[in-house]
Image (cartoon, helix red, strand yellow):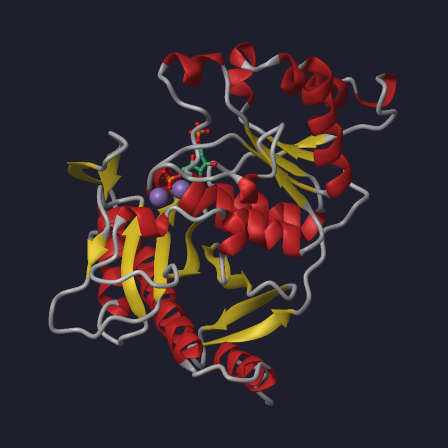
Amino acid sequence: MPIGTTITEYFIEEQRRIKGVSGDFTALINDIVIACKAISSAVRYGSLVGVLGAADTENIQGETQKKLDVISNNIFINRNEWAGHVAAMASEEMADVYHLPTQYPRGKYLLVFDPLDGSTNTDVNGPVGTIFSIMRRPEGATGEPTEEDFLQSGVRQVCAGYALFGPSTMMVLTTGHGVNGFTLDQRIGEFILTNPNMRLREETQDFSINTAYMRFWDPPVRRYIDECLAGKEGPRRKDFNMRWAGAMIADIHRVLINGGVFLYPTDRKLRAKNQEGKLRLLYEANPMSFVVEQAGGLASTGTQRIMELQPTNLHQRCPVIMGSKSEVERIVSYHLEAQ
Ligand code: AHG
Ligand code: MN
Ligand code: MN
């Protein structure tokens, strides 16, 4: 049986196309791929290896960590700290910038990640994933990287993507030249290119939002969802479907395959806690926005392009509305009309 294009082969070919590239980036991707395979394995064996349940610790956002949040974070760190491609890392599960141990060489890339997205799904055998984003360290920066070095807008991402641990394990990523999807062939332990040049469908009737928060929504979000719910009898003149996986990675992956829109907007309840949205800009919203935009979709807060937001801290949150272009444009227009 012929083996398809492996993810390593794909990136080496990409590297050959771009003049003056050192191979550092390809080597970094390779380590991220190995980390994702290791996390996939930990997730898959679940109770058999005692990794489910809470870790009895809290992260910087005050969320109880799952054992798998901690395990996945450690896997990602260990795999990416030694090779000399990364200057420093930051993650949902660490309060501050992670500085590499002194014995390892420093590279030119900054790596940010959500080691396990949707981690409440682990205990119910639901889909989870890993999200990552790669930026260059700012020109001229010296010494150990600081938080400031990480506070770059999403348009400056060099590469972003995710691994989705569902019935099969997939990696979907972009370097700014479209989006490609790879499926882990467990028989040979390699990610194989299965979804080249992924494009978001325009014609869609799916929306994804946690309707439990409906009473707290702002009027533009309420208007959009009310119109979807009105179906054929409403202004949209068609019936819609609602889906919510509890892991943005799984919801946005579905949007990439089937079209539609994913919303985690800000609302009255979040504002009362001084939060603008729930999802984090640097390691959730920005990487997923890069992928969605590169697949022909849009990603907005409702009033601003997510990737143009200037981050002010590592764990900053933002409202997230992303998916098929015409749907996001519609929701943005409702926000603008309401201003
Ligand atoms: P994480 O597990 O990394 O903290 O992220 C969970 C996020 C996101 O993946 C998901 O869409 C959302 O939280 C679900 O939030 P609700 O429980 O409020 O629906
Ligand atoms: Mn997450
Ligand atoms: Mn997480």
